[in-house]
Structure formats: structure tokens, C-alpha cells
Image 1 (cartoon, rainbow, N blue to C red):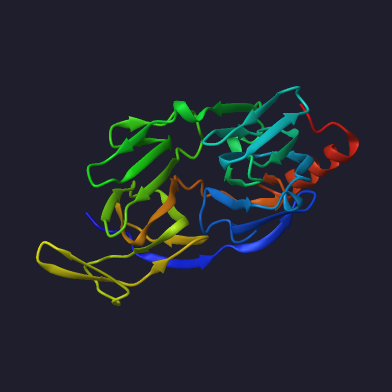
Image 2: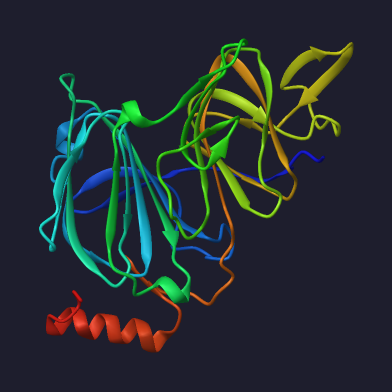
Length: 300
């Protein structure tokens, strides 16, 4: 067994999207092989409705899957196929755009005006790029939550974890998507499939992710089995942590505890031709998609 080392950690960067939504982007429109099969991750968190109320009006998607996870507030959605609905606090939507869809997402804050959620884009392999679009809307109460004796909590959104299985299924990237809370001072290890690319995104508190068998600093310390553990790689709010290879991820929670998403998926390892929300394998396929969009034949 081996603990995954931290290859990189970086802060999410402020970005404007949609009709003027203020959000933070952890990664996106970068080297697609870096976190293959994942392409983009946004944290849309704001307490000022003026910074998100205009939302994400009608826009196309093809060749990818979008995963929306709402923590506070609400996101209403509708599409060109007549589907519509609403995601509330704790709800998840996994949308397979496949051959193409036009949709809109409109955020609305809670009673205090707070809006918080995440959106992740996952690539589709060539064989599924033109599959029929579909939605999986999951209510918060249908997501299993595990609570350990030490207070660690894990919401299993996708994949198998500690004897529980998330409600979203049939996803090309065979992902694992976990919402993890570790109490103050607790050091915890989580299994991750060796063959998957993996990252964590810290959005509350702070913690340290590292291989404790190779001390690199003294930012956080904990006495474990009579041996002093020293870990650097300190990560706080809105921090992306990209891991190397291994079958475990270890975190040491800081003084206020830490909450983060732990996401992994099987790499697709195919060429990527990418323009905004349309992701194909070749430039010819991408040009065809853009032509169909202009000519009104994008929806199949």
C-alpha cells in the first residue's frame, strides 16, 4: 500500500462566467491530460445575489458530462428537450450532454442570500460522444452518509466507499465523488483506486495532505503510535490538491477541521479537441459541431 504524494496544490482563481456569475475556477481550459478524465472544476460561492443572479443562460454542451453539487441556495434548470427541475441544498445533478443539448442554469440564494455549489466537467470517450443526453437528479436524502467514531463524515455521491454506494451510476469515467469532513486534529486515510487520477478540493477549514512516512515540514503535527508525524502541504479554503499515484490519500485536519471533495476517475487517454462547452476528439468533429450550432441542427 502507498500513500499518494501531493504533486501540486493551487488556489482557485476568480473568474466570470455565464451572464456575469462571480466564481472561482480550480482548473479548466488547461492541459486536458493533467486530470483526465476531468476537464474543469468551478466553485460558485457568493453571498451577494448581484454576483450570481444573472446565472448561466442558454448555452450548448456536447461530448461531456456535467456534475452539479449544491450546498446552499438553489439552482433551477431547463433544456431544449423540455426537461426542467430544481436542485436544492445537498442535491446533485449528473447531466450527460452526449450528442448535444442546450440548457440554462439559474442560481438563487437561500433566505440569507447565500449561494454555494460546484460544477465538474467529465469527458466522454469517443464511443459515447454522440450518445443520447440524459439526466440523473439526486435529492440530498438519497445520498448515503457515513459517520465514523472519530467524527469523520463522508457523503458518497458516486462510487463505492466503505460499504456504501452512491446513487449516481452508469458514468463513463467510473468516478468516485466524495464529500468528506474530518474533525479538528484527526488524521485520516482514505482508499483511492490505484489506476484513477485523483484530486481533492478543500472548501472549509484547513488540512495537510502528504505522505507522512517522508516528513517535509512541521506545519501540522500529531502523535501517532508513539511516532511524531510531520506534514507540510497545508491546504485551506478554495485549494486544489493534485495527487500522484498510490492507493491511499492521507489528511491531517487543522484546528478547525477540514471539509473537502475527494474525486477520482479512470483516465480516457484520447485526443481532445475543445471549444468552450463542446469537447470532441478531432478538430474536424469540433468544426462540425460549431457548424451545426450555427445552422440549427445541433440537437439530434
